[in-house]
Length: 390
Image (cartoon, rainbow, N blue to C red; front, top):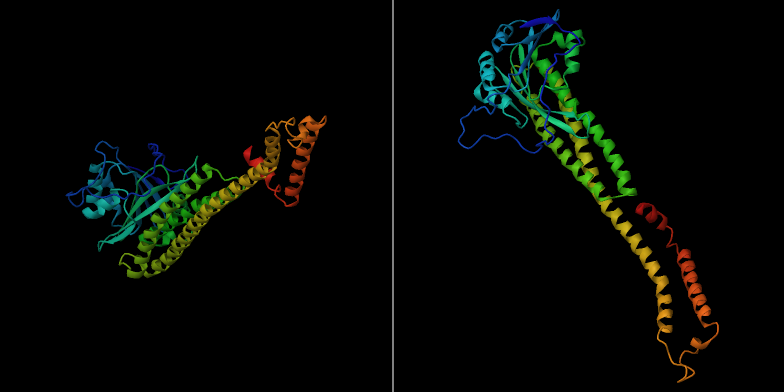
């Protein structure tokens, strides 16, 4: 175990790359007949990285924990101990952590088996809170969904992160290090509120990105709707549905903390929880607004495609209308009447200027129709069709 003062340099942790496919719509469930408290972990998985931050109003230290048993002496002190477990690791490590913290088997199952539905479970001397954290992708659009489990005790907070690669708790660690605000003057319940509030606030940058994507899609849908545009709309609707499924139960969980309370959460911290609840409501409103906008984009897309088809049909109708009389004239003179039989059998076939006069009349008719359609305004959108075809 190594001990040092909190410093701006975070603990470097190597983690496997996340998979490209996200199961946004699946929650974990036990196999039929499985025993309560069964852990679903890889047998040969590396042990999780355990970082313990112990602080009070006077000092703050950070410890890299190598053995779970070393956390025990920090749990019953006057200071606040934040045990941050990065990665799920193997079952043996979690059995040791369960013994140190005295976790109920069902509580251990909730924080380890992922993904769970966000919820709150009260075990008298411990409070278990499951939350879903979202992180924007760095190189592509979209986001990651990661489960974070909290076990709140009298003077300690155990946080379990699904992935050790990144989180949104950096500002909280910095506030503890620099003693900024009141976090080091409060208990573990205030720390739990602070981390939960950081998770909720992490939704706003993701939603801002979706707002920009929807604005770009609005222009694309109106100006140049394509099959690719339709795929983008469906992708955004799917991702917004995943955000809704993540934030909706979290709102209910926070509301239950405010409504039902707990002996581990002081009345003053419950007031702060109200602000956290307000943030979840704001996220819900933004998600619902963007979902309605994407539904409206679908209607605009269909209307744009229909209008574009109407303009194309108008163009084809105008071209057909111009060539119909020309085709009629060419068809009449193509019947090859015999003027020797009767002078009324198309005498124009024997005129000296018959062919030029026929072509001239066809050109005059075509120009007359073009002028007529132009005066009616039927050519005003043909330039748009030409640009879209390019």
